[in-house]
Amino acid sequence: MKLKGKNVLITGAAVRLGAQLARSVAAAGGNVIIHYNSSQAEAEALQAELQQAGAEAHLLPGDLGQLSRTTQLIERARQHGPLFALVNSASIFEDINLRTTQLADWQRHLDVNLTAPFLLSQAFWKAAGNQPGRIVNLLDWRALRPGTDHLPYTISKVGLAGLTRSLAAAMAPNITVNGIALGAILPPSDGREPSGILDNVPAGRWAELEELDETLLFLLTGPAYITGEIIHLDGGRHLV
Image 1 (cartoon, rainbow, N blue to C red):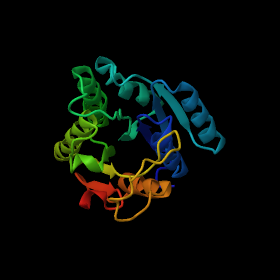
Image 2 (cartoon, rainbow, N blue to C red; image 1 turned 45 degrees about the vertical axis):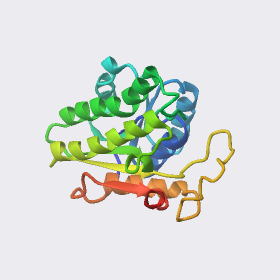
Image 3 (cartoon, rainbow, N blue to C red; image 1 turned 180 degrees about the vertical axis):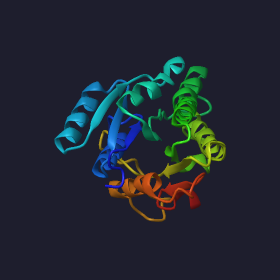
Image 4 (cartoon, rainbow, N blue to C red; image 1 turned 90 degrees about the vertical axis):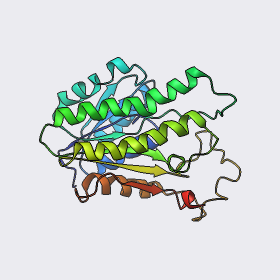
């Protein structure tokens, strides 16, 4: 229960990986602030699930694409008490390439995947003052080995990787800033496994969700001397 009594804001926490992160924080005793945009029903169901398990959970609706209102999310989250950690998990992931990407697609990905985490992190840091805190950014193995697929998404994550390291230096010594670069973590929501997705994964398998839990909790509760690091949870995909 290393997070007992500590408030953790997780963006995009209503569904899929975000919901898994919320469950792991709650299981470690943390008070979870569940940010969501369009997934209200799922957010409410997750809140009920966590509360039934004895955790404290609060809902925080907000559209990260509305950048002028993004910093208000930190203020609203702090109504439940000081924040110990911010997990930037919300993300747009669209399968478009150089030929098919339109300016609106490009800007939408940058707004939600890069600019919103910057604004939230900046507001979190300012609100923390001299108190210790942690920021964890959810990245992708593509961020360190960008290719031609999922172009706006990939470039937004490249930027977030750079931002992670820059903020780690700027926010030291009180706030640690680290990232988790994900690989084959969770199959698509339609249940169909993409053909060949494990061909270039040395581990030869999908990740276990418990491995994601362990990585997040390590960065939230482990040594405060670790900052500016990006841990690849991808079975070695970035090596191939």
